[in-house]
Length: 117
Image (cartoon, rainbow, N blue to C red):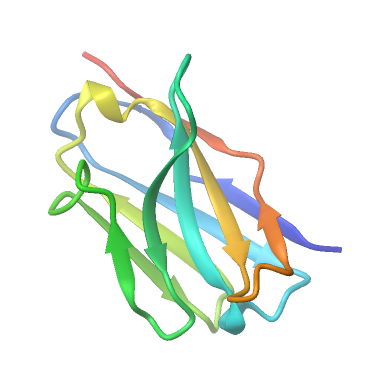
């Protein structure tokens, strides 16, 4: 049984930081590309950051320089360090695991991030 469990969300003031975690089980974590997506109310889900099995990273323009994605294959966990948070970063953040072929594609349940004073 595959599970992706996100944690670390919450309420933070503008300019603050949060670190999201996504712990995976039931998959060979090291072969999956891991991606963080987010969805704000009334908006489409959007890609935030990706890290490939080989460690290559890619970011949405809106978060470049503020967010950092990383992975720990020994812990089957992917992280998203979010700094200099803005109100527009408010969304539900989802973790995704996907193989290169796309044959295996899994989602977590999401964690709420709210940036507000």
